Length: 380
Image 1 (cartoon, rainbow, N blue to C red):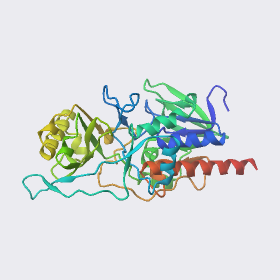
Image 2 (cartoon, rainbow, N blue to C red):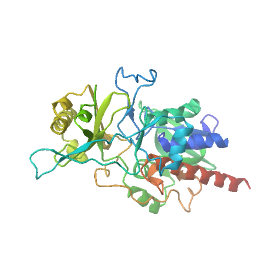
Image 3 (cartoon, one colour):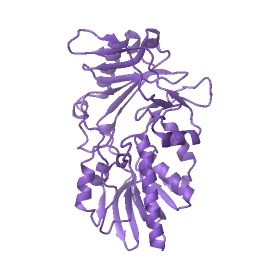
Image 4 (tube, one colour):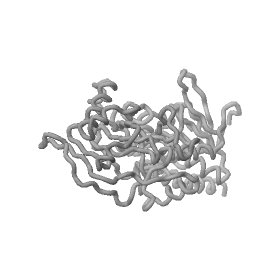
């Protein structure tokens, strides 16, 4: 081991929920770790935005967050996530679903209302957005073990250690050393952007490359308002449309305001790239006006995130909105030089909840247990 190169027993690559939760578990076990994140923020595909001067009137120090990534969780059957939310003392509230839904079909000249429905089991949200989970996990970890803006390019086995090479936004490279790697990245991104020396087994590269990255093809739009005028019309804020650009719309309101609507764009990523963001936002506002009335065309604030344009999320292969959850690929090599030295823990590797926030916890738990068993075997 070269003393001038930072070392940790376990290096976690990726600061999304999988990576942060793995760091929490390793801390509890007394295992030395470092976390490398390519973005200049933690959270990965969880991204909650706070509107300017937005203050929760009941909790003046807590500003509401609005999710541009995952929004919901289901405590009734995602027990591990529900317990973590409780342990971290995060406030929750049910997704608003009271009222009728609006529908736009090709065969009808105008939107029309239909009876609404409630999800079963009930979907819940976090006060402050899913970003509150990221913040609370991050606050419980040692900040000097987490490194932002370190984009991983190369992993090389050098004797008993693994040397990782990262590059920052200035193009400067840095090396890190570890005994074991927890790869908290989407499978396809890991397979197509990282240089492994020696190479990973071909079957593993093919496995990982075949798994669509959850959220990667999607874009999300959020519009915020001073009041929930749609509720006053007896509407739930839910809508479905084949005209678009928004295909699926829901109420995005915080419990005590601001109030909002959010939607997933139905346009494929390649079509979104041919349009400017101002044109897309204008089309979203115009559609909300068709569905919910002219008041909807004048949001106080609006946000847009195209995950297909995010290089830390998507690859060129991640462009098909129809791609959904698929069975988890193998998370580690079964033989060869990388066997026992690297384990993948991104949400797509979860067996029960692949692609969901609960899946991130699931895969992190399995990965940490796996490497701890390997450490025990080596120490016998």
